[in-house]
Length: 85
Image: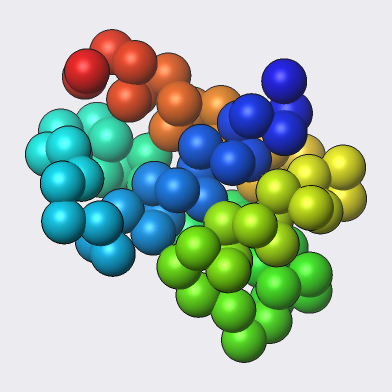
């Protein structure tokens, strides 16, 4: 489950790279910003220099190492996406 949450959040962070990305609601945008803030340290620690799909795959590979704040933020993003979709 944690892996799926991290994978989803990483994809959401990379959404601008996809031409058919769904429109983001204000709640999704806020949740995405929270993920970027809460996971910044984890991304730098485990995935420094990676972007887009590469970042998503790296975060997925390091799901078990993500901080509690990052995991919580990604769960909130998933919930906002499900509510908005």
